[in-house]
Image (cartoon, rainbow, N blue to C red; front, side, top):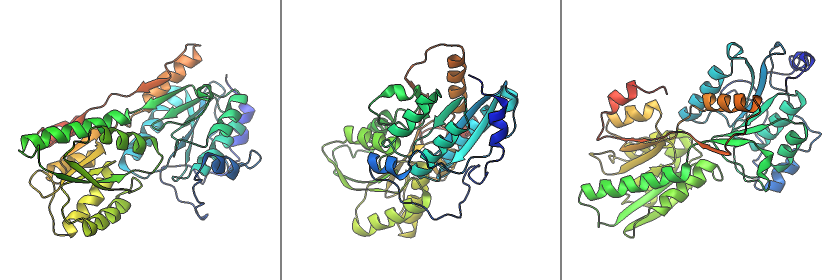
Length: 356
């Protein structure tokens, strides 16, 4: 499965502007395809993106192309770092990294670039679930296995990818609803009408779809979902949407934020509006991911609980690649271990034991 040295040497001539977490681009952002057909038509097979930079490597290295979503959150940064520290030359790999800046068309171009460079494996954290069939068929025809990380793809033929590694997003949402039910009962508010708003992630992303579905599964008869809008997984957009919610709905009891960064923005908006949040505040704030800054927010008394989405996928993906190299079969769906944390726990001590 190793590629010839010539392929790697040729790759060194490619432009490096897309490499690195959160790198900027001077090109105007293209509109994200709304449908599968639009995504596939937006990047015809003959149209190839500028190549991610590749270092010259010896032919005994396993070359991995990783098409990352972007750098929209602390979670994503930790996820990127997990791959960069795992897929090193010391560990027997060469990593070609691409930051798609939250654009599906950028990821499709990156995958085609990886195919042209004849990498050994392609790893993708897809921006959205649909619109991937054509480019995955191209990878399959080239004999390059594809591994999905974090988010799923909705394809008619699941043989187009080897396996998926990530969190159980539906369970995360269900766990959050179950936690809220218990929390309200402990406060003596179990039968009270509870007004809820949700800051959703990027619409169509697996984390958004799963967490929205999971929380809806746990909705109680006396809970009212006032509104749900996307905060695009970013702090600034989360703050903007929460400001709008506070103006529209004067009596919000709970805000569910589908990642920690949106929660930080929501907390800023709540405070700016003269309200309070957290265990001693007016509004209960729930979030997902459990990054380090979420523990700081719980310690400060602003965030009530965060539900873990483990970003350290690099070692698991490396383990999968080693099994494939040995000719072994791997399980199609592989969940990472996850938990939750709230202010009833010693969150300061827990934070010190965590790797992200």
